[in-house]
Image (tube, rainbow, N blue to C red; front, side, top):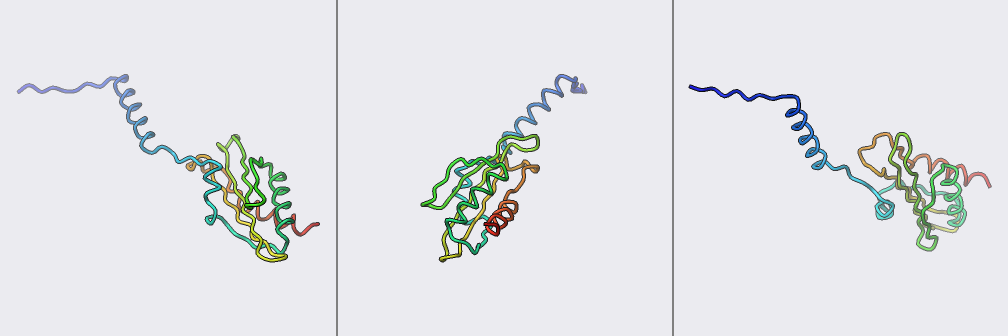
Length: 143
């Protein structure tokens, strides 16, 4: 009986590895986020109530984003949202942030922060939620 033994050389193995790796990447294509995704994520973020008017909270939110070096992409005070982002850095492909500001009373305002990585598998991208809430609280304490 004739036995045929397959032979694999380095080129064949490298080509097979490249094809398998490429197919695996395409099948597990990383989820990406946009500013629109952050905007649509209202109700999914971290909510805190601040003892301040909505105007004061709005101004403090803009000041907070500036201090944290997040670029404001758009703001709509009448609807109550601010969209900001940070671009590519050494450790991150960037982040998209939404802040939703809602008046609860004369001196009570709800602020919800949503922070999304541009590429979901990027474990080094910071989550801005806690930093924004901490800075926002600090900005509202000082007048």
